[in-house]
Amino acid sequence: MTKDNQTLDELKNGVLRHRTIKNALLFRGDCQQSLFALARKAREAAFASRSVEVRSVIELSNICRRKCKFCNIHNYEKHKKYLIDSSRFISIVDHIYKRGRRVLLLQSGENPSENFIDLTAGYIRLAKRRYPGLKIILCLGNLGLRQYGKLRSAEADRYILKFETSNAKLYSKVKPGDTLLRRTICMRYVERTGFSLGTGNIVGLPGQSLNDLADDLLFLGKFKLSMASASVFIPGEDSAYRNEPAGDLDITLNYISLMRIIYPRLIIPSTSSMEKLRKGGQYLGLMAGANSVTIHDGTPEELKNSFPIYSVNRMTPNEPHIKAIVEKAGLTLSKKELPHV
Ligand code: SF4
Image (cartoon, rainbow, N blue to C red):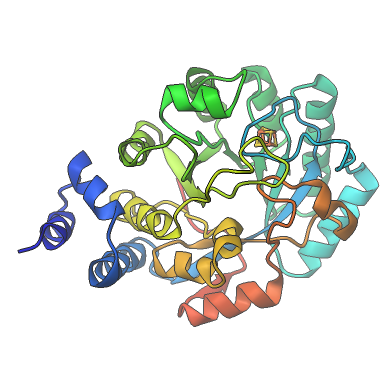
């Protein structure tokens, strides 16, 4: 029996040792296809409906206090600062609700100013009053416990705070001025305020090892999560890492499958970064066990280039693309949110 077949057998028997995970991350060919099939089986056992949660994203503002080395957003000479105002916000919400969306992701650079938090809480209230069934996910970075509380009181439902890497040294390197400890404390705050918590990593960060990725998968087990993602590293054109090689799509897909096998009930997105790296990459994410997609129909067209989080020419999936890949994967788009913790 080859090492890969032995690893596959271990996974089938629920053996989830660090070494097993590390071996599986390198699967290719038949073993990789078997890994994907195992992940799809785990997804079907956990989510009988074969549904894919679809979210619309509104990138509220590109103002950010950080300078993450993998991100382009802080080049304000090139990308003017913006903040979507409340009348624009509500007209976008009206538009996407009419299109049938019931899950909305509000994303922004990290801006802990009280004004911004109050403004965002007001936007959430406005949207919830108008559309009580609308679910709101936030992705706004590190904040204080009281600020998370304010946003939760405004009735936002879920909060995504990606840990990016569980290697504390690497974390401080890629996110100068921040620490993994601080991030973890914020994740605990999010849990304490009653949000449903989501997180995620980046696969292929400069200086990241296979060991780190196996650690990342086990790190997820420390939290009560409803969502987790894996983005493949893209060297952003204006970022400090612009000359670094991109991450490996196959390792990212294997990571997604392993997340699904180890934590079957997670909502796992198939991210646009995978499509950016390889045409068809987002479809492969669904085949590897993901069950969520984001449609970029919330950020006004003229502002999309001002939110170049991983690439100036990032991929912003539209509805026809999403429908096509979901159908091809034998799945259906869910109008409602998927059940989660
Ligand atoms: S990744 Fe997020 S927190 Fe970091 S610089 Fe970009 S927008 Fe800011």
